[in-house]
Every structure is written in C-alpha cells, then in structure tokens.
Length: 448
Image 1 (cartoon, helix red, strand yellow):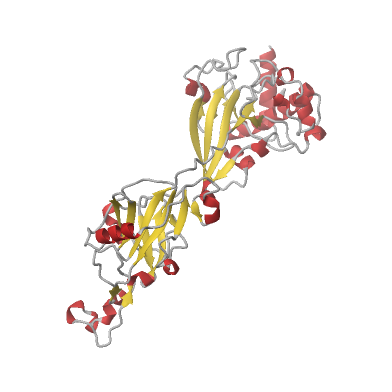
Image 2 (spheres, helix red, strand yellow):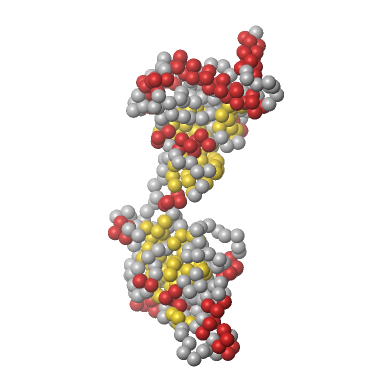
C-alpha cells in the first residue's frame, strides 16, 4: 500500500504542468527535480542543518586535480634550473665527436628516414649549422635547370633559411614515407612542438641546448623561410659512442615554383644531437576520492558509499580525460559512469554491494578505467558535472548525480586516503565531525 501511494504521488508530480505524460524526457526531467528537492529535505533533516549553513560550501571540489598537459608539453628554456631540478645536462660536443658526426652526415643519404628512438623528455643540442649554398630555380635561365645559371646568379646559404626546428607532437594522416610531401603549413604546425632558441644565432654554438618536456622524438622538421613551409625531412643516426643525431637536408618547393630548390639528399645543413632527459621522474598527481549517494527512491541513508571512486582530470586541448579508479559500489541500483555500469566493472550483479561491508572494504580489487570528455571546462566543477554519472531507479527513471556549491552534496571529494562508511551506516556516525564540516568547510573530518 505504501508503495502504491508513493507511485501515485510520483505520477502526480511528474504530470503537473503538462498535458501529456507520455514523454520519457519529460518524466526524467521532472523526476530529477522531484528527487533533488526530496534529497535536500532529507539532507537538512538528517544533519540538522539549513541552506544558510552550507551556502558557500565547495564540498571538497577545490581539491580535485585538473591537469593541463597542453601547457606542460613545451620547451623549457630555464637552463639555470635544469640541474637544480635533477636533470643530467649533456656536456659540450667534443672535436672528435663533431668530426665523427660530420663524416657520417656529409654522405648522400636516402630520401627519408624513420626515428630510432621514442622519447618524451629529451635535450636537443646544437652540433652544426652548414654553409652549403643553393641556387633557386629563378636563378637559372628561363627558370630551367637544364639551361644553366643566369649571369650574376645569386646563391643562398641553406642554413640561413632554416629558422624553426620542430617535433611532431601528433601523428598526421599520412604515412612515414610521404613526410617529404607534407609542407602545407606556416612555421611549425599547430600540432608540432617548436624547439625554440635553435636558430641562426646559434650557428656556431656547439653548447646550445634546449630541454623538451612531454614532447616526442618520432618525427622532426624544420621551417624554410625561403618557401615559408615546414619540411619533415630528417636523418637520424646512432654514432658510437656518442649517441643519437638528427640531420636535415635543405630544399624548397614553395607556392612559387620559381623559388624551388632541389634536394641533394645530404643531411648536413643543420645537425643536432638528442639526449634523453634522465634524472627526473615527473611527480604523479594524486587523485581525490569521490563518495556519492545514488538518490534512490526511498529516504537516503547518507552512508555515501553507493559509489566510491578516485579521480583526476587531464586536459589536452579541448579533450578531457577522467582518470578513474573504482573503489566501491554500495548501491543496488544500476549506476553508470560514462556509460560504464559500476557493478559490471566489478563483475557482479546489480543487487550486489561491493566493498562496503565492515572489514570487507577491499574484498574486490579496485577497477581502473578512463572516460573521455569533449568540451572546454574552466575547472573541476565543470568537468565532473560533465562526467555522466547516472542512476536508474526501479521504476525506470534516470537520475544524474551532480555536485554544486551551496547545494546539499549528492557527492563530495576528499583525500584518496579517506575510508568510506560501512554499509547502511550514516557517515555522521562513522565520522562524527562530518556534520561540523557541513557548517565549516575547513574542518578535516576524515582525519578522525
């Protein structure tokens, strides 16, 4: 009888203000509004608080990490900080090393080469900027190579026009043998990393170095200012006992064919050395723990263990990756995170409570997984509310869990070392100062 009365009341709530109750979208929206209002009343009654007590509460979301790797994928010019930060800085190029490199790269090479290493953090070190001269096509009679040079033809020094050194940070939709044809860009491609401070000002500086962080050594290119294009023609060689070197072959095939410069396939116009950035292991940013109530059809028990997971967000451009480790599933309703049902992830049925019984919080191993979000989120609040966390109640209505400042917490964030409540034990009994935290967010109730 109690269930019947509840369902009749729910039906009335869902149909208020609408001429029809056949739309599932309408039902879901109204049900969410109804449950949220019910949850607010339950929350205030359970903890003896009112809206004024938590008007500005952040529910721990200020500690959720959102790491922007776009800004950490870069050249690091702070040479005076490299050794302080633990990097082993490569020494100067010796005369013997220089001679060995030039002997190898002065020979005619192949049309293209592949990389021999796959490094993310590495030093680039100046070895040689060449002096070889070239004649553009417009310096030949009738722009015809076969007719010889014009009287007073003016050559150019190839290395004088090699102004940018780049690594390809994102693979383009071409195969490696076609890299010589990929030249339709200005300066470095938007998806490339610019190894800056490597230009003509360092043409004779054997000690010139740059540290690249979170970049890669898969493909190298240079910008030719003569034809305003980037040419992905490089030759990588390992020279015993000195290490790995990358050389470039200057040529031009710009929008104006009169500026074309033929290739000679000698990769000695610009040579650099690459050295792995050893000595530092970037710190792993800790996840935080999210504890949530699933807003089931009955009054919440506020044990905040219906789903427990650790999370951090990683931003790369406009793509956000939620790096998640699922810890517990104390609810018995279908609950999905980014379309992944949490009970399925543990390999159990929906009505099975996982890792929430006393003394059994680690009965099943945690489950790591990732969810990709697209958009542009300014902070972790936006990112976690964009993370689709849905609960379906026995009547089929779907509820989205969210977290918002100044609204009773459907979920909250705490340090990842915090243990969650036992099954059906209100968090106020497991952690007595939790109630004080609702009124004062500076209280660290998890340290009890």
